[in-house]
Length: 337
Ligand SMILES: Cc1cc2nc3c(=O)[nH]c(=O)nc-3n(C[C@H](O)[C@H](O)[C@H](O)COP(=O)(O)OP(=O)(O)OC[C@H]3O[C@@H](n4cnc5c(N)ncnc54)[C@H](O)[C@@H]3O)c2cc1C
Image 1 (cartoon, rainbow, N blue to C red):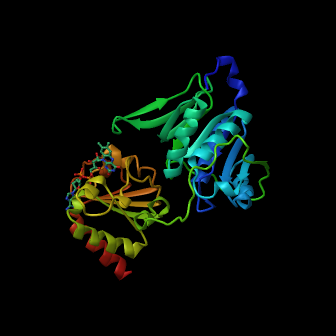
Image 2 (cartoon, helix red, strand yellow):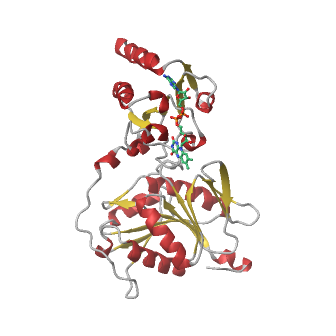
Image 3 (cartoon, rainbow, N blue to C red):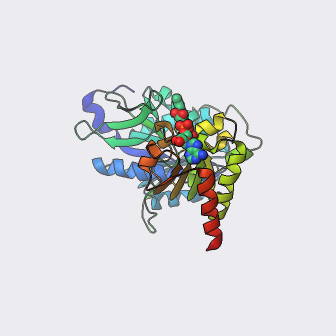
């Protein structure tokens, strides 16, 4: 809602909306709590985790270990499955009651459906898919940075006269803090109220799309291929290397668009964001739309014929050569030791 500058201080706390899938709190929630903690500490605010679900009460204390000072828990059977209209109305009522300064959600299918509804109901703005979040030291506003114009610029957006400030963050973009055993906090229980809109749908069954099982987001090692891999058969070579080192297989959009591998493997601005320990880029030039999805990996190894690509310049280890010669040599070497 629109506020006057002198009203800013009556909006307190940084809220992180727990991502719940199949009744389980997802790891992206820990990442949201990590950045929420950082933002809240800048202004001496509290971090609240908001946990909406059915049968999820047992997971509330765990969110305190991941950085929440308070957990706002609504555990109601009506919240089984994802009820976006119901959750949006409920969240809006809770926002009105507790007045959080900031609400962070995951840029997942659930967050992307829920957060815009909340923004509309609260008459405030929302910045989706943020890659950076910080507090402006002068105004105290949330600086929300995200790629714009096809990833060619990074735009920093802020909401000077509306509260709460809403932002979504993709999984693996922010880092979770270390889990802190024995950390103490408070769980506040809330329920559904008579005025909350009823659930509009009934979830009969939840099943996982086989394609979406490619869990790149949490892979420790990724072998990723681009246009340089040249064909679907070329990806068999990458899979052979991936099998040897226990890696998942990723791809650039050029490889997806060529039909060599499915979209579930795409890394980058319009694909998944990854934060692997080792990222092996094979025949990927490293355009900005790809880099935004993988550049925070710990160690980047690039194999390319051209030594001057952005990926080769970014890489910790850059191997200049034909990937169809280099990769079999690496596999041979692994087999030898
Ligand atoms: C709005 C928008 C969103 C986008 N989103 C994404 C996204 O999410 N993810 C993404 O990846 N891209 C995305 N793109 C596309 C992006 O701009 C690039 O076009 C794409 O990343 C290029 O893929 P590439 O590096 O595989 O291909 P290229 O840029 O063609 O690079 C191929 C590389 O392979 C090397 N090579 C060729 N043969 C060999 C060989 N035998 N051995 C070794 N090296 C070889 C070449 O030297 C070259 O460096 C997006 C673009 C737009 C406009």
